[in-house]
Image 1 (cartoon, rainbow, N blue to C red):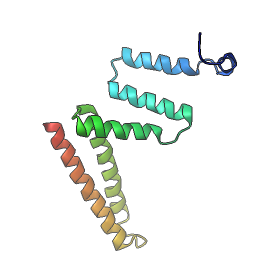
Image 2 (image 1 turned 180 degrees about the vertical axis):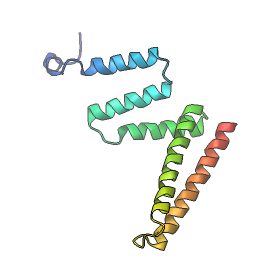
Image 3 (image 1 turned 60 degrees about the horizontal axis):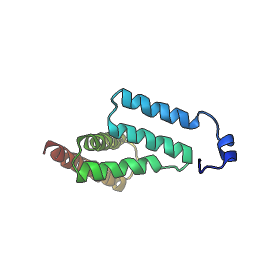
Image 4 (image 1 turned 90 degrees about the vertical axis):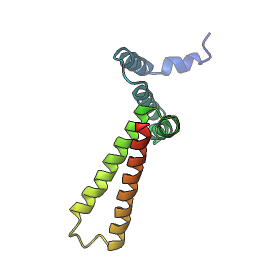
Amino acid sequence: MSKIPAQELIETPHGVQESIKMDLLQMIQEGTDPFDIIYAVAEYLEKASAERGYAQHIIDNIQTIYGTALGHKKPLLDEIQTLEMRRQRIADYLTATAKDETVSEDERARLGFAEKAHDRKIQKLKEMLAK
């Protein structure tokens, strides 16, 4: 017998759980990378629980543990891609505001430092990936 009270089962909108079940089955049948499946389930759980940031917390942990610590290729590639996109946004901002006097030299210096830090981290992850 189910541990969920009958009234709760009655009040649960039909299809909510079925949707994620079908999506999960489809991803498996399509041969989706297991890490992408975990990301998708984490995003579903974030929406279902209304807990903002849950999916990103899971992704960050996967990248740190399975990527950095255990050397799994997919999380390393995902983290490299994220860092490259972030570094590019910083570079684009610096370029777009090159003649903008509202951005101070201190801010430019910090952004330049952040851009270089991203480059170092990307290089480190690429070296790990090559091993």
